[in-house]
Amino acid sequence: MECDKCGSDAVLHAAYSGLYLCEHHLCRAVEKRLRRRVREDGLVPDDATPENPETWVIGLSGGKDSVVLTSILHDVFERDPRIELVALSIHEGIEGYRDKSLEACEELTAALDIRHEVVSYDEEFGVQMDDVVEDDPEGMAACAYCGVFRRDVLSRYAEKLDADKLLTGHNLDDEAQTALMNFFEGDVDQIAKHFDASLGPFEGGDAPTDRTRETQDHHVPRAKPLRDVPEKEIALYARFQDLPAHITECPHASEAYRGEIQELMLGMEENHPGTRHSIMAGYEKLAALAADAFGGEDSDTDFGECDNCGAPTARDSCRKCSLLEALEAI
Ligand code: SF4
Ligand SMILES: [Zn+2]
Ligand SMILES: [Zn+2]
Image (cartoon, rainbow, N blue to C red):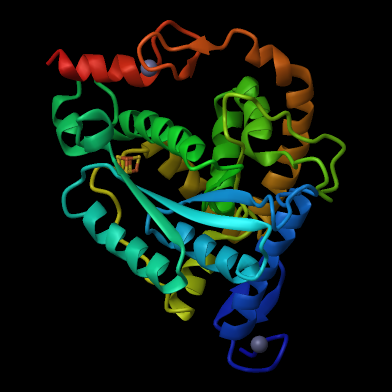
């Protein structure tokens, strides 16, 4: 088939839009959607100036999503002195997996000349994920531990690096899965939090919604500029732009429920192209309403500090500290 834009050989049929796209036009379409999302979410605030720039910390894992995010953000903001980019990678201590993906991160950030920080669970907490999986004091999936440690590292380092925003490479498939999981679990509170944590636009964004997010003092605000782009298109983009991305899956990946949802969603997408987009369009509206009803200040009121590490928590000791304590007790 031929590209609908230029007549060259098409590499993708985007069934949800009906378009056939060649390599060149697929890549431009991915970049365009990221730029539009940056605008709609109001990521560049009016008060960012060359003298007082915004710092965006990008969570760079070395997988295709974060590699593509870093590369496009670099291209868009390279000559914009209002925005400074810093890449932050995490070494979880997973043999044969993370070393390879960190090589990809280093190659990319060196090529783009972006500041790159690497933080390891070992240095931060004295643990390696390979051992955590082995010991498993709480009888939980690997990702449940890893997610707690990752959130802690990301928010502490985002602060340390003076980040105004923390950007991650979540794509359309990831976000639509999360939306469905929240529905299926009946978790309206989580839907409200999702809006204020990363979905809702900042002041000044031109997204077609009445509500902006309530940013919370104890968290660096997050954003997901690739969340309009399907996973497959990001993978193709990485390949066509010859970006160093690490493809292998983590050996401890254990989000079985998410996998089930992904299968269900892709089945629906195949029979009803556009399903992922319509899930997100409706979900964002509902999330704004849920945030109005359940989010904002109320969810904030009982936040104190962890007795041990000072992290924001509603309990005496934060989740990370109690997990570390359980691991030490073994
Ligand atoms: S798949 Fe799970 S265990 Fe592996 S790096 Fe991701 S969160 Fe951690
Ligand atoms: Zn074309
Ligand atoms: Zn703590």
